Length: 82
Image (cartoon, rainbow, N blue to C red; front, side, top):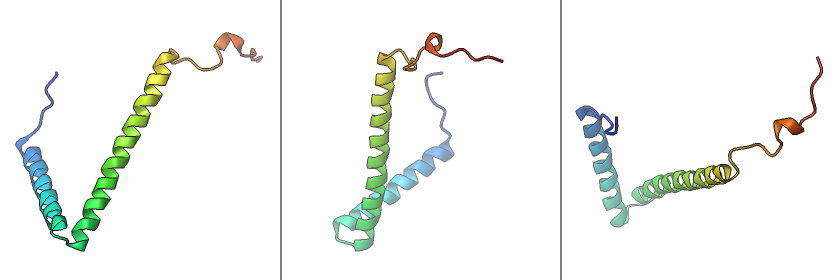
């Protein structure tokens, strides 16, 4: 299934949130201090999420380059006795 399923209710909620954020940005452009603070807060959260995603992709790429193996192979470990 390639197409995600969205309900009309979810699309309306997303549209409402984006419209509210656009209104906050408009107030920030006019110089309202509260709107500037909200915009900076939301922007910093988005920037942090993008940075975490980038770092995850770098770690995933590094893992795939090493084949996903541990640094120590199971054959190199000392046998356990029971």
